[in-house]
Image (cartoon, rainbow, N blue to C red; front, top):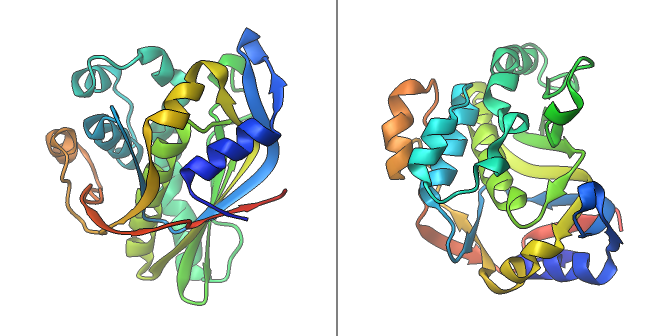
Amino acid sequence: MEADYNDLVDFIVTNGDVVAPRGKTTYEVRGITLTMPHNLFISRAGMSNRLLGVETQMLLGGFFDIDLIKTAAPKADTKLFEKQSNYGPRIISQFSEALDILKKDSHSRRSMLYLNDRGQLRDDIACTTSIQFMIRKGFLETYISMRSWDVCYGLPADIFMFGNLAECAAKYLDVKVGPMSIFASSLHLYESTRDKAEQEYLAKWTQIEQGMHCRTVAARLAESLMPFSSVWSLYDKGTEDKPIIIGGI
């Protein structure tokens, strides 16, 4: 099934089960895989590109700084950025080793990043559980597994951040960037954000220009702290109507 963002939201509301983890009413579909080009950007009213730039830089730079988030987006709900969101520190020590596996064996299936461990506290479990890189037909393919994925706030930021991560990996490996496939055990929409998801998002996905340049103010401020600075330009460079493939349904 091909879809754009609005199709995806409609699919979840129409076909999802109503569940209430932690007492929060949610529309949920399970066992879903989304496959997409790596360079997609979702536009919506009120979305902070400064915040998105900071989140991406923290992922690529291997650190987490709640004060930087507050500076980039003073009105943001910091409860959305608790310790389970500190992806950068969780993967930074694994990144080079994972890519070196592909340097030695380009057909390897062992290039993995893990975001949780057996000793992880229950309230500290990242929504993303693993990221795998594979090189096939000269392209770096990225496979991401998620235990929980919120379609309103989580999905737009995650697609952008993971795409940047894939671009960094491909540059290091000197290969082209291929598609991303993201598997979610639970892909869901909270009832409290349904209006925002249905009304505020523009009905398009934008494929944006790749480039090794930080274009957001927050990213420029943080750039000197990072080993990587591969944040795409946030200017529209062309669109595809329905570039998302929904599998597992």
